Amino acid sequence: MTVSDVSAPHPPSSPEKTTDPGQQGETSKEDASARETAVPPQRAESPSFFGLPDESPRDPDESHKERVDRELGELLQGLRVSATGVQVLFAFLLTLPFASGFDKVDETGRWLFYVAMLSAAVASICFIAPATQHRILFRSALKELMLHRANLLGVVGGLSLAVSLTCSTGLVVEAFLGVLPAVLLAGAVAFLSCWLWFLLPMISRYRQRKRVANGEAG
Image (tube, rainbow, N blue to C red; front, side, top):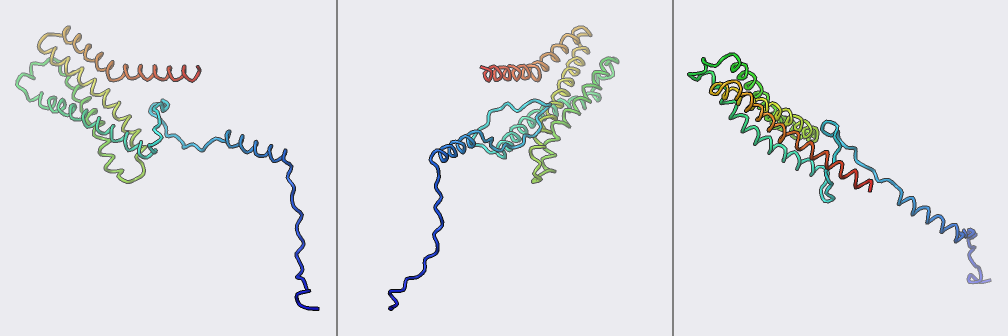
């Protein structure tokens, strides 16, 4: 017997698995339906201002970090403009007691001056605070927290500035024209600032939310 006549033993072949075509089709359909109904992982949203939901459209080409950076830059730019105006008003109120005719101001005018100066100081602090916190929290991964905090400070500063403008107008008008014109003009300033700064954007936001709800329902 030659070597060529000897055949190497073959390992036993494993039995082939037969798949039912109908069962394979059902499995592929189940996998496809599972992929369609699978909910993608969502990022946990940060708390919105005053509990209002985030209604701004998402840009697919903008990451979450880029969005926070952009919104923080826009907010700080707006606060910088507001801080300039309130600092001019605060400087005027600080020099007013040293004017020659300030001793002629009655008690009502002095109370208007005190409220105007205090509210201007509060507004100035609120408008400057985000920039100062931005320097202290530099590279601390708390930029989104700083964004919401700066938003709140901006609203509080706006309220304080509206009070200061109203009292300052009442003080000046009362000193020259009397009480009744001071009440009318100060009330007009208070109404205009509250309408343009707070009520109108809140109404616009409410209408937008209503349109979105009606669109989703339709």
